[in-house]
Amino acid sequence: MDKRTFLKQSSLAALGLLAGSSLAAQPTLQKNTLPANWMWLRPNLKWSDDEWKKQLDKIRAAGIEAILPEVYNSTHALFDHPSFPVKERFLERLLPLAKAADLQVHAWMWTMPLCNPTYKKDHPDWYAVNRKGESAHDQPAYVGYYNFMCPCHPEVPAFVQRNVEALARIEDLDGVHLDYVRLPDAILAKALQPKYGIVQDKEYPEYDYCYSTFCREQFKEQSGIDPMDIENPQEHKAWNQFRYDAISNIVNNFAVPTAHKYGKKITAAVFPNWQSVRQQWHRWNLDAFLPMLYHNFYDENPRWIKEQVEAALGRMEEARPVYSGLYMPALPTADELALAIDLAKAGGAKGISLFDFPAIKDVHWKVLASKLKS
Image (tube, rainbow, N blue to C red; front, side):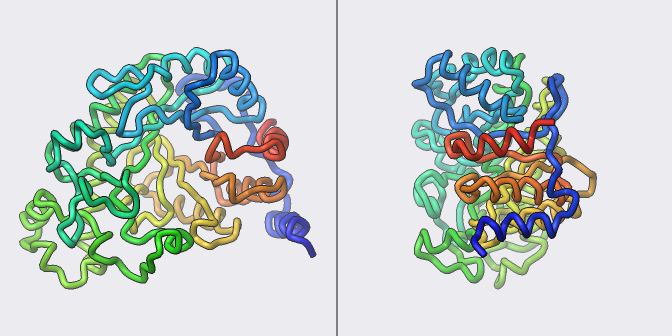
């Protein structure tokens, strides 16, 4: 039996009536309602307005109701930010074009990394520190852009809040979408470890954050313990919870109230292996969650998508919508994409979010139009 036939038969057998179901899109999406289906989008600044109109109409025709354009990557902004370097006012150009295509726009912003050279020069103390004492300011883990800030630094939450507010105050924007709301990966997803030539069978000091002066002093004040003295920090519940809470504080007490103050929805791209990035997102007061259920990163088959949606919904103290983030390069065929959509729905997802626009091929567009449109 070939792979395509196997996937198709597995979908039908496992999902029964759900195999033929669709994630229905509303004919016209009303403001302040959450869309059913989303798409992450990294802007092509060279496209004309006419080209953008063409592509946005194509996206909407496929049943996608919201786009998530990346407009703040911690190096520059692509909108009229009042206090951060602006490369281009792209978001202001995109908004009327998206509205004309009946698409919501939720602005995608990086949260905890800070890569801008001027800010790095002026605020070296803002950065997270690993258990070896290395700062993400100048010795980032894995890749050069992992310049993560320390969540316990007294100025960092306000900095994040200003970035959220800079977006939320844009009148025609529908929402703010947080990315990198976390610390660096203590343990990478299994399939990614060979890419970096590492084996992470436990949390090693060079990947274990954050041991900044600010985190250490605040935890010691609460517990009487300096985390540097903890023999096995991976198993220390109070120390782990402290770091979860440090990130949750930024989300719940700074980002969410700011977005809601301006009447904007606020969502986040989050990790299924939340413990490894200190991201206890099931306790966040967001309007919705877009977990990145990239099954191939974890050496899993697509059925894992359904399991992770169920697990996410089961962890939440207050029910909130979950939209399955699907990694398009791992779903190259029509049957694989259709199966992933059905599995997401079977797990209880309200819809899907696709990563990302350039990875969607002709075969995908046809499946999306079939599965997502009512």
